[in-house]
Length: 251
Image 1 (cartoon, helix red, strand yellow):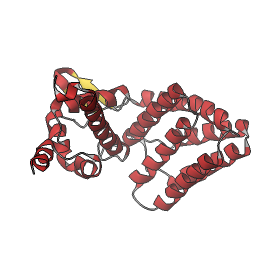
Image 2 (cartoon, rainbow, N blue to C red; image 1 turned 90 degrees about the vertical axis):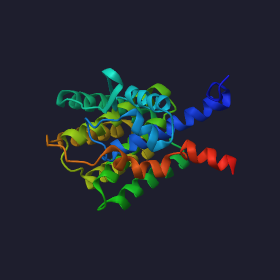
Image 3 (cartoon, rainbow, N blue to C red; image 1 turned 90 degrees about the horizontal axis):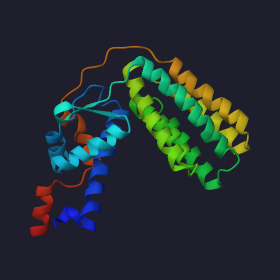
Image 4 (cartoon, rainbow, N blue to C red; image 1 turned 180 degrees about the vertical axis):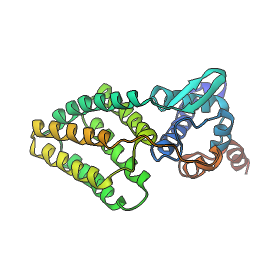
């Protein structure tokens, strides 16, 4: 039995794959990685200090979220949604997130309300900084709302459509309006705290529709190579490379 086939080995492999997923997902949400960018398994393995098999597993997880496309000959790229897909995703999000806020209105605990208020405050603090940070925080606000419903299927659908919508905005969107997003998030939060599910649903639908309306086709910007792009994300989230872990163990 190999180490990776033991329960502890499987848990370690799952954790390392999750680290890679988080890093690549964040790089996509922050537009460091653009639609169409290649994600070679060997480079990912080298960057994160894991095997190509583990890198492939992480790419498969991201593909299930709609963020990565797996092509023939084991070539993976950041997904490139069409304009029609982008509009459909927002339409689907509107209906899903109407359901989210209807379930949450009047049922959020003081701790949850405080957490959401803190998140919106973080959005406010990020205003004027990098647009990519504001966009990531705005997306995470919606994902966190869905998670608070305690409904795994609903959370998964919202998470996937939110990530895909963020990818669509990277393809078609003009600069993200953080000021609009923050004020709209505050209005939704106020309606949730008041227990007004009708108002919350209308505000959420209006907010997402406005985000979609602000979309505009534009050419992608030039970026560096994959190793340079993922360097800050790998340094933040990645486990130590296998070679260094082995040396540490021997020492």
